[in-house]
Image (cartoon, rainbow over all chains, first blue to last red; front, side, top):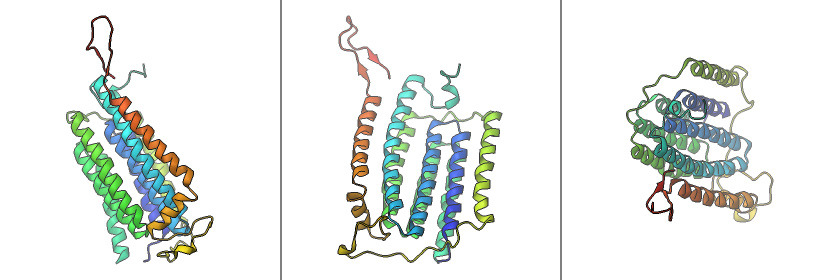
Length: 101
Length: 193
């Protein structure tokens, strides 16, 4: 296959950028969370690409840990969002401004 | 053929990631997120990381997105998301986008990593050939994962188990409705958390 490491890094960078824009521009906390997941996945792709390129297993095992930690993080974060919704009846970040003034 | 698959999967991933970000409806966004994860699993397959591709579909597209969809349906926030982001946010994210995009473009303008061809991947090492090599050898077999996890990465593996336990306890504590037992007759008073 004539696809090299650079193409994978390009896709990974684009995916990270899309997730970044999602985190910054969207107002819904759930969509912001999905943007965070996209960024994590972009990093995973770059790690697997480098791991394959360098012929080492360590990057792959690191991705394994990242997937585990991301699953735990999603569970805790969604529980926080549900607790917040019970208290404030909203998930939009610009209505959650109790700390800003 | 593999080139075509690479372009197919990366287009699938990037397009559906874009649709996740621009979608008004949170349920549709979650559905496109699943497509993104399946595309990522395809890219992992092209990198000969078969175990990670399976894990990606199982954990992300299976568990995490089901959790997301469940919470979206539970909260029922369809009415929202008509608010435009304010100007300062748009300017700041535009600057951030330009920085990231210039970083990505520099990769191609300066040729990136050279030589960047992937070496031939080893299907599987014989059982006795695993050594205490540092770094571990890359193979496509899932056995390499087990070997790495139970020798070199034993301590992080155990700590991940504790992390999952702590996350589980944290979720239970966060989502429990606490009741105060004996405060002067108000027996059923619930503290909303």
